[in-house]
Length: 371
Image (cartoon, rainbow, N blue to C red; front, top):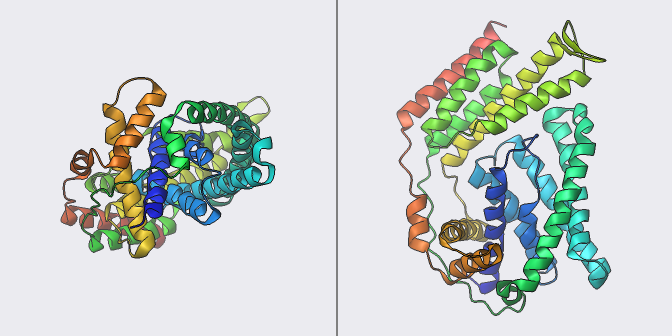
C-alpha cells in the first residue's frame, strides 16, 4: 500500500479518535456534534487534493459509524450529511480565499453548513419539521464551538512539529497489523430481519417489548449499551411534541400542551429509532466483509485508530505534546500489539442471538395480526 494511501487512512483515523471522544460527551440531541473531528480536516486543507480529501471525509463518516455501531442507523445518514457538507464547504472556502481567511473563519463556515445539513436530514428521517425549532440553539452552539475549534487548530499548527511534517511529506507511515474478525453471516441475516421487523411493527404496545429484546440482542452481540443517547432522544422527541398537539390534552404549560396523540407518536418514533440503532450495533458486530482497495484502506484506518487510542492514553504532558506523541507513535507503528490485543473480543453466542431474533420477529408478526 502506497504512502499516500497510508496517509489518507492515518488522517481518517485521527478524525475517528476525536469523534469517539465527542461521542461520549452528553448532548441535548443525539446527532448534535461539537466538531472536534474537523480539527484534522482544518490542518490538511491545503496539503490534500480534492480526491484524497473526499475519501478522508467518507472514511470519517463510515469509520465513525463502524466504531460507534451506528453505521446502519438514522444517525449515520445525519452524520454523513454533516461531514460531507461541512468538509466540502471548508475546502471550497480555503481554495477561493486562500490566505485571506483564517482557520477560525473556515471552521465557522463548516459548522454553519454542517448544522443546516444535519437539521434537514434529521427532519426527513427522524424528527419531522418540528426539529427546526431547535435550529437557533444548534446554530448558536455550533458557531461557538467552531470558533473555539478554529482557534485550537491555529494554535496546534503553530506549535506542533507533527503538523508541519504532515504537510511537507516527510513522514513515512508504518503499516500496522490489520485484522478483521470472522464474518458471522447468521448474525448479519438475523440483524437484517430484525431491522425489517422493527420497521413493520405496529403500535407502541408491541414496540416496547420489541425494543427490550433488541437491547438484549445488542448485549448478546457483545456491544456496549449507552443509556444516555436513547434517553436524550426520548426526551427531545417528547419536548418537540409540544409543537405538534394532537388529541386529548394531558398537561398544559402556558400556551403549549402535552397531548395524548403527540406523545404516543413521539414515544413510538423514539422506540423505533432506538431499536434500529440497536440493530445497527448487532449488524456491525457481524463483521461485514470489506473488499477491494477502498475496503483495505478502511481496515487500515481502523487499525491506525486502535493504535492512536492506546498511544494517547499512555502519553503525558501538555495536550499538544500528548497529541504529537500519540501521532508520532502510531505513524511509526509503535503500540500495534497492544491495539490488536484490545480489539480482541469474546465470541458471540449465536444460538442465543438467533433465539432473541426469533422473539423480535414473533413480536412484529403479532403486532400485524392482532392490530
